[in-house]
Image (cartoon, rainbow, N blue to C red; front, side, top):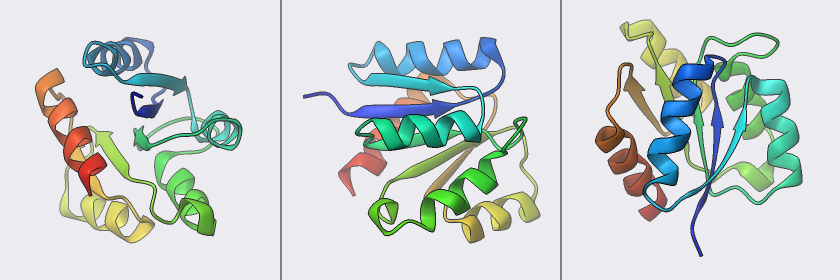
Length: 122
């Protein structure tokens, strides 16, 4: 059974790229434009891994991660950030929030899939 990946991204173009990249490699994909909708999708579906942007309306990626990590049932859920933010402070904030990995945009489909597969094996 393919792994289910929840992708949070507010840019329709980037969301489509991320989702298609994962779908083409056999993953099941759920999408959300922000952390608020992401939490709803997470609550109503079995999700194996989350890919999230940082900068989104309503609830940003770091707030989403902190909320997810505050629930014991999601303590081990792998979370990958894909963001344009790439300064040391951004990486520290992501790590402190509970992200498992961080890719800086632009990412290739190969980078994305390789990182997702690496995180799913842990």
